[in-house]
Image (cartoon, rainbow, N blue to C red; front, top):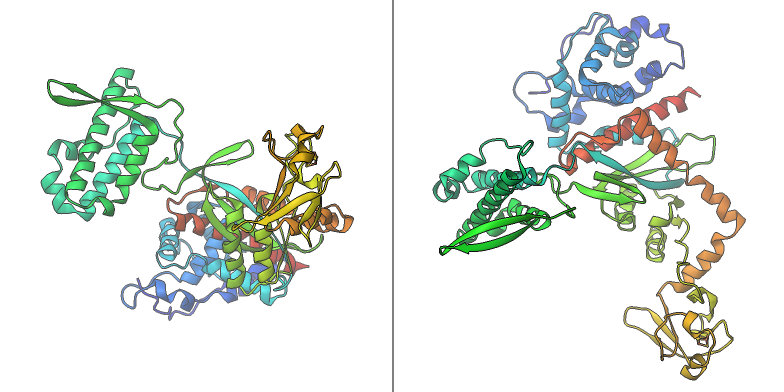
Length: 520
Ligand code: SF4
């Protein structure tokens, strides 16, 4: 498929002939005036070959894709909109008589083409840069970040089916990478068994147990074979299969008449970390009382005061179990990519740590948020009940006793010891920090303790609380993404695909907001 220019002059361009039918502030009229001109076929030339049949204009397909996601339509509905909706024809500068200019499957192939050529963020980049050029996104403005879960189109499958799929995935990898080994060393009966689909639905308990033993036996044969052929480390699916075995079943080996037989015991409520052997990045995520199977996405957007339209400046797909604390580097990289240096970044307490704050300061950004409240589970004195002198690293305990000595640990932590003779006779000994009996009390202060204490004091001020009111509005953006542009359900299998889908959804939302902003 090539990108040869279309020599035919477009006749009956709907935007010229009927554009004025739409009122001035109509979003699709604004789309044709502001968004249509920024997409050029040349931006996609790496995705097409120099030879072959002329493909449908990729800039047109991108614009169609954006409108499709903006209205959350299927591929077929999108074709119908291009055929029969005048506002779409105006927005896309289509000829008034142009009908069926593409097949619905073209949209799917176009998305695949973008993915295969690492152009997944092209549409998002273009719209975000347009927002920056128009002054809707300030390079040194404020931002906020939060994560939301994205659900993979997969349910927890029956243990027997999961075991089968893990062995089948290994067989397929073996056949693809080491065809010779597969042909000569893998027993024929095993090859046949995994050449078909399998479902344990409707099987009796006994048959299921026998089938599990057979699958495990096959898996162990393949493991031994890979070891003998010294290809163990090249087979990605091998370690996945062994993990699936380990998590889901207990294997017993029995010797009968000098022959080894396998007996399998299914683990009750297994702690599964792999749900699809072909995509081990799909994990179980837990946030509060919500659990889901899939991944999650960091959403970064501008955080300008109430009444200003905010735009998404980044979407970062991540594994479901990854801590928000570990996302800061990706967030800072994302800002760097668009030349954004926000003055402040608002986040919830999951993101806040002294080391993260220091990291942001190095990038000229202040990380704003509340530290997690100190645990109140244990009654008695906590570290924040002591008066600490940061200059001399000494402390006075709640009973008014002075500390005895201090020590700096290799980790950067500071230990402040109290006098054993004071503590042993203290009536609050059992309720004081660290409960070890017959020992003098000691405070263990983190490297950042001073900064954290000062921040905690600042968190209580009215001005800080007022500033933090900018943070929760990101929940509205997440809700808009989920309700209007189909963000929550992920259709792609790979991480790259999931990032692509998040990126298109964010593009569609930015376009919705951009059209609202230019209409003002
Ligand atoms: S146990 Fe020791 S450090 Fe704690 S309050 Fe009593 S005297 Fe102070």
